[in-house]
Length: 334
Image (cartoon, one colour):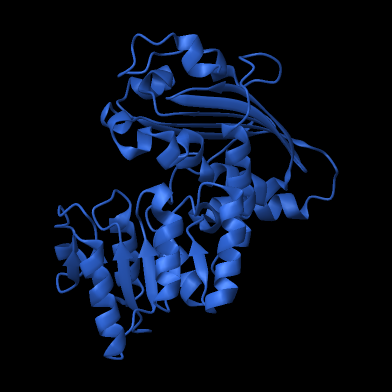
């Protein structure tokens, strides 16, 4: 059923923006205005060719205010901008009277989450975040199984996520930890949220490796002991994966058995939007523990591959592609 909601979008030229455009279209709503300082947004033609588009925030702001005065206000603002700008752009959406749907991570620091919850109360609007693994059918089934398990037994979990990135990554805002939160926040936040959602809140954690291209550690949750490894370096891919030319590898091993969730990612954003439009979306409070965990990992001192470490934590470390004169030890174990 067509709901006829009007959407605005910040970050139209980014990698994830097409998923939001598709979700808006699939839920029979309309994107009426978009903004990005980069003008490479031909993707709009595939979804909303009539949407107004601006490369200057001031003109975007003025247009949004104009249509608001004409009684055509934006109902939802979708935020797909770089991570460090999320907080500001979310607040912009609240000020114009819209509910906000923000990509991961909602913000970089746990205190920003608390401030956004106050802002929701102040403006009387809602903030939603995209925690799409919570609507993945296999992940939902796993949570149901764990919730219904009566034993006090702790699950032993190995999480491995390798998503290869080229040298461009380090030259972009994503390679700047102050802007992206590093790979733990930028690529790992969904998996930490998933683990906490399924197995309960954190009890303790240890960081073994923390580098420009990888991170590894141990996490004890209420119902699980987790060894985790994240990387954007293709050299970390298992040999059988590299040999067939695949550049992404996801693995979740639970009590020695592989949990399969490689498929089913294509329409998760659409499902997230459907839930939000029904009033069932996830907000800042739901995102808090994942953001807190990523923050604690960033500020922890790595101890090296010892103790309860993930097997891939022992792989040889790699130099930064743009800082080749820096000692590897100093890059990874500050």
